[in-house]
Image (cartoon, one colour):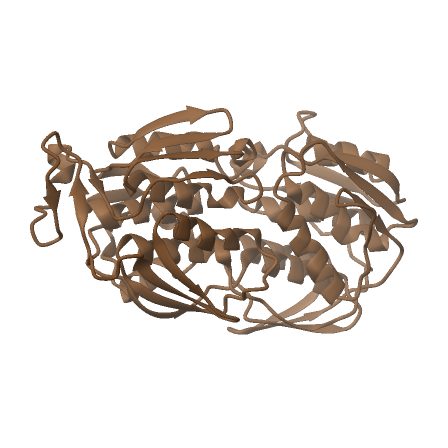
Length: 463
């Protein structure tokens, strides 16, 4: 029987240091797939080796790609699009990105390819992608006829015209774009309706261009891809704004000073908007060409403070706080203030911003994230559920959350979602006494998260 990892988070006095951002999970996925499809040998520098990206790496190997792995370098001998059929069904574990991207790419292999994964992955919706692929001559179907994995893909990608809705997952769009250069005929793809999470598609177009592919656009919703071949590259993976959102937020809620390297001001990552969000909430952010500096809140002389939301309106500092919030039910906040924010284009930031809102002063409104219900968990619901266990007043709406700042310690569940683990850690840094159960999910995107947090000053321990 596998023992579950639990993390205990206590109050952090100060977050301080200089840290290199973990590599981008999104760019690592894309780089591996494109290096696999390319002609020649690619060198991927500073890749992220996490549960999700390893699922992609192993899938590429199963499709006939030769990959040599070192700590800071991944050497990939491309297939030129001549993929092999995997010997068995591919178990993609919990990686939705791998599943979506590989569904189209598998059509380039002979025979049939079957994709499956864990219980969570088998609950991820796929029907809109399957319908769009049918329009462009790809035969792919759900084995249970319910639009969910396992998915079987038959050989053949004819190309042509397709349309796809943009309001559920940008990964459907990226899936078609990434493999479209190898279709038998040019591909024209139109995104219809609300185009949510657009920055993730911009990331896809960015890396496709770097691997030698030209995509023609007639307006932001129409894409034309002619037959082309990816060319091997020497490519460096940039830092991940999604993962760094927890470090940036930690420094902000603790009035700390933190420098994060390998974050680029001209990045295509939509999640870099976390810098603007933290700044709007009262954090002081300094953006440089290749790094970011966080100086806690705008008032650097105020020092670390936490406010008890009691009837008497008492205030307590770290020195006077008796760490009894869990047992007394006293609600704690930090110096940040509430925010109204639409995260339509950056749904992965929902857990981070919700955690910030739960310890900020005042009320926050997070909107535009109905599509976050189709991630590893229904993140709108699971964040509302777990924050409520910590005494936070939360109202769950169809596409977002309304959160009244103020939390105390308690026991919460991760639901196997890496972003919930890291977001709930932020709450514990203010309240102390937060125990996160089933916490090893953080390995999906940030394998050394607890270690990095401890080195920066956050008391987080495995128990």
